[in-house]
Image 1 (cartoon, rainbow, N blue to C red):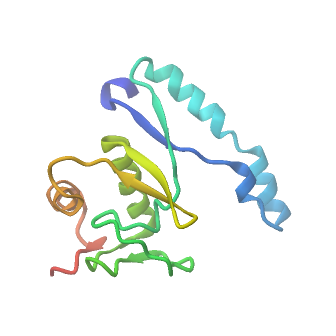
Image 2 (tube, rainbow, N blue to C red; image 1 turned 90 degrees about the vertical axis):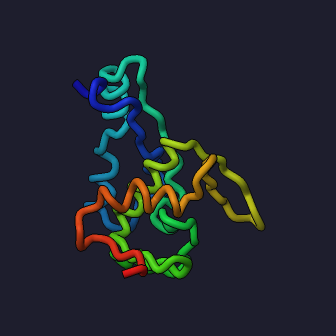
Length: 148
């Protein structure tokens, strides 16, 4: 069933070590989670189509429409882009970024001691693709592009 609906499934490459805090209850939840098990089950069900692990770095802090980097998120629920004016739920923005990494592929570079993830897009620009593909599929009220 899963294989017939989706070509490839993309999962964040999550590492537990960076998630531990001072909260004992939270640390227990993280320790007991079995993300590897879920990935293995999906790999077994997907067969040749497969499961691809994606680098989650910056998925919620880079604009999915223009690529602008928002350095001042401070735990906000809404991502506001200073480049194109996009206002979108931060988790939805991250999901779109991960989908684009899965669809187009990406490269990871280091610039000035900072990690940078770049899409490998050919043809249309990221903004043109976003406006043509992503925007029509979003339900009204969850995104404002600044063009309204």
